[in-house]
Image (cartoon, rainbow, N blue to C red; front, side):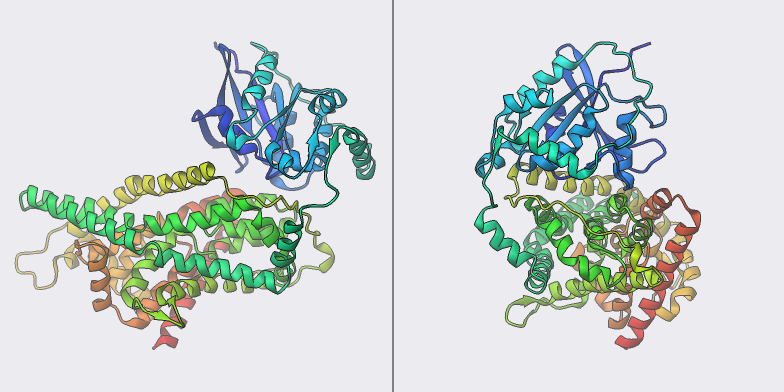
Amino acid sequence: MNAAPFRFALVGNPNCGKTALFNRLTGSRAKVANYAGVTVEKRIGQFLAGEQTAEIIDLPGTYSLYVASPDEQVARRVILGEMADEASPDALIAVVDATNLKLGLRLVLELKTLEIPMVLALNLADAAEHRGIRINVAELSQRLGLPVVETVAVRKSGVNALSQAMQKMVVPNATKREGIHLPDRVEDIESLYARIDQILEGCVTAPANPPRWQEVLDSLIMHPVAGLVILLTILFLMFQAVFAWASPLVDAIDGAVQWIGAQAGALLPAGILQDFVVNGLIAGTGSVLVFLPQIIILFAFILALEDSGYLPRAAFLLDRLMRGVGLSGRSFIPLLSSFACAVPGIMATRSIADPKERLITIMVAPLMTCSARLPVYALVIGAFVPKATVWGGFNLQGLTLFVLYIAGILSAAVIAWILRRNQKADDDFPLLLELPSYRWPHLYHFLMGLKERAWIFIRRVGTIILALSILLWFLATYPHAPVNATAPAIEYSFAGMLGKFMQPIFEPLGFSWQMCIALIPAMAAREVAVSALATVYAVGGGDAALGASLAHAWAWPVALAYLAWFVYAPQCLSTIAVVRRETNSAKSTALFTVYLFVLAYVGALLTRYLAS
């Protein structure tokens, strides 16, 4: 039986560069899972310490071991060895933002009381130097009684020195700790920070005030009026860019898909195999793949905002506004994450200490328009909204997309207010967030983030969407129409039968049986609605041809109702599953599912009525 590997835990405050350091130390030898019994993501990577292979666990960010929020509790429980079937780590890598040592050392002093071997990484050392902060590393190491290494994870600087310090800590076949006791807090916060000041005195010198340009920028970005204008402008430009910038690339991919389909059709003999390859494989996956440029542009904006230090400031800016609907600035980042995908957005709510606010944020997170809805929006908007320029240069299609996003945001605000209307004011938790220094997004990590998001989408196209496209092709092809059939062949297929069975339920919304069919596979992946529509309408000429077919088959009010359905409906089994795991409540999950479907039905019905 092989001995368990030596285990390091990477621990530190949020936004201190832990994950960048984790990537440098582990390279590509990383895997992602969840802690046993808790839906909190953990990353485990391999680290080569000479001839030994050690493991590094990237823990959720935390400011203290004496914590309240679920993600910080997980970090504490892992360190103390309280997780099921998981011993405490053999050593710790404490990562501290070198530009904010005072805040980071609070956690370091708490970790020292556990008497676990530890090395301190002063990350963002280049940013500290640029701001005029000078750190006597040797003196700091002596005062703390710890090895201290300066690192710049985004540029590999200091990573080799940190690796050498870690290798010295690795003990082959180390005896695993049964559990570690966290002593009761005997020192108040004021005394703790006074002790930190004594440690830093004489070995750290820093300018008295932040740079003048940062103060000026903060005065604009966090201004109650100008700040909101800036935020809305950023969001508006983002949605304009999704259509305007992506259009040439979308057209290029669409043309490539059509060319590949034509070549495959010419090479294969007419018959079932040709129909399967051209209309099942190529048309099904290609109709979704064409939206990759729009999704990449959306994520480019989100990643840039995350890396620049803007998001915590936006959270502070929106705190008062969000408290008016029963939430706080803590909910801002989970809700913003939900624009990419509701699953990580819901998981991000574990940073919210107030359980009532956390539950409400989970309930409204899917109303933030995720990237999976984007292909459906883009298809219907492209088919029914002309490529016109209005109001002196704004793209009309981009404006329509902006309205759909705003509809989801406003609906979330109303529902949050309804759910929290009986909450007492004294139950509110004050918002405390660290404001990181402004910085330009690092190009390497920005591109790596885009690559990761693009690969996730492409992998979905090649797995879930491909499988569902094949299934849809089968359902739309078999059984074949009888010899004396007068209606289109698809009406005699399994898909046609299913669509006609559902159609009476959705008839008040104006949905045809073809539109109903697309709603079923979209529960597994919303993007599949596009390939489903391409299959049931028997369109193989690319996204433009499908749009033209829909424009001919659907009435304008029905198209708007279809968009309204996708704004609200919980068309995602993964989201429903993560709500069940995060809330650990079947009742809450049922309420979540039912209220969103009812909202979608009523919203689509009212939209069709008003548009008519």
